[in-house]
Amino acid sequence: CVRDDGDEEDLEQYEVDEALAIWRSTAEGVRTLRAEASAAESAWLLAERERRRAAHRARGLDGVVPPMSAIQIYKRHCEAATGERAASSGVAAEVAELLRREYATLSEEERRPFERRAERDMHRYQRQRRWKRKVHAAERKRAAAAALSANAGAAGGEGA
Image (cartoon, rainbow, N blue to C red):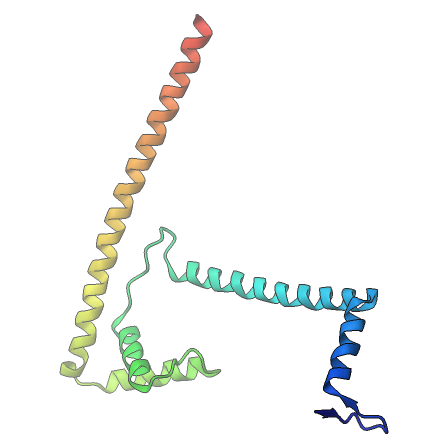
């Protein structure tokens, strides 16, 4: 494979590979490669951080995913039917408005499945919230008991 870079001297692929290997071993090459790797790693870390933030925002403050409305369920239904996510396009707000209008034109019978699913999702959300409150209450009770016993042990040790 010949590399034509526009000048009179064209290089074979092995010559290009050898020259790059020599350049990578120089101080300038090492600095450049480290900078490129650092930039790529930084970009990946920023993307990962944003992905985690988005996942955290998708959950409520207590870690329970909020319930979906009937329109949100309808949107997911449309996305599944088309095989394309509305949020992935640059016109997400316009798509959301079109879906709201389309949902409004559905008959009551056509809306019923989406409303039932939204109602079930609301029950799921309420059930998970109750469970989370119980778990948090039990954790607080355990922590208070541990603190009380630690304080009692420290007070008992001082008097002896």
